[in-house]
Image 1 (cartoon, helix red, strand yellow):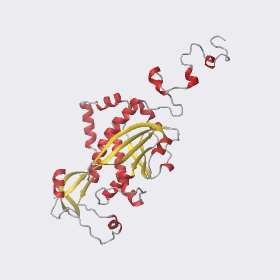
Image 2: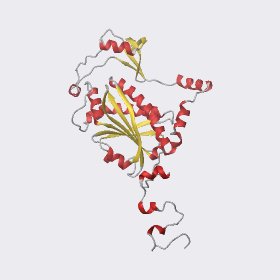
Image 3: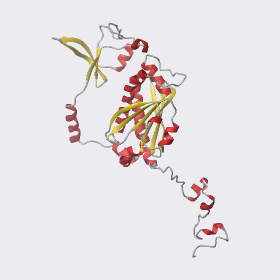
Image 4: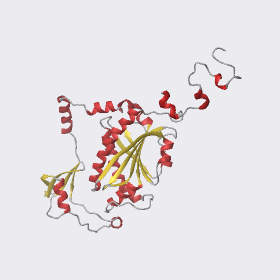
Length: 338
């Protein structure tokens, strides 16, 4: 046979004479040879589906998300938080589930119109600090990890909804999406948003509260969720999208749409902090003392954001308020501090 020698001469001569790397098939690939010979090891059991550029694009999106989330949580919890992206990786769903610590609170949600479901995991350290703060504490972490109670999960639900809405906002310059919370869980074993061997993108965020490291937040995107928009996850596309400038005609159309948009108006009479025990013991006839003095202006909130001061009044049989000034965060903070 042309190109082959007899097997009796030498085992290495069973391969074509012109095959330069026949020793690879006998001795295996030495990983240190990758750079020397120009090839790269390929894992057929876990093929890469996200390119390096896709992962860089995901990192850019979630850097913006982490910045926005830090602002949202700082305002919501009234304590300083910092959130940073520490890694963006791809791995199988099975590897992801085995790598996550427990106990942990997991949110299962959708980013419509993207297909499938996404997971948000929050470590116990972060949860414990947030729960303590929401119950009137200073945000300390419990020493011993445990699962959250039903009451604590109900308190966290609104915070998690704000978090995934912030994520949707960060994705908005790539594709308009709407977040929808499906449910909460505390164990990945009962959650199946992808098959065990499916590739997922894992984004890990580090949370610092008042300058201290308090834990991690993780986001798991199964490949099918992002498959149809991979071309939009390149850093070049993200850069170009951020640089788009609307024409005067487009700006006018946006203004016209905004003019007819409905906004939600609420008036905040005051607030106070009570313990969980006091909350559970509340009954008809109990009186809660608020932090506002009877002579102080009330606060008008527009779509959940504080915007104006106002004085209460009445028109015939209806309660009303009269706007007195624009809301000033620093004036309000100083007033409450002193």
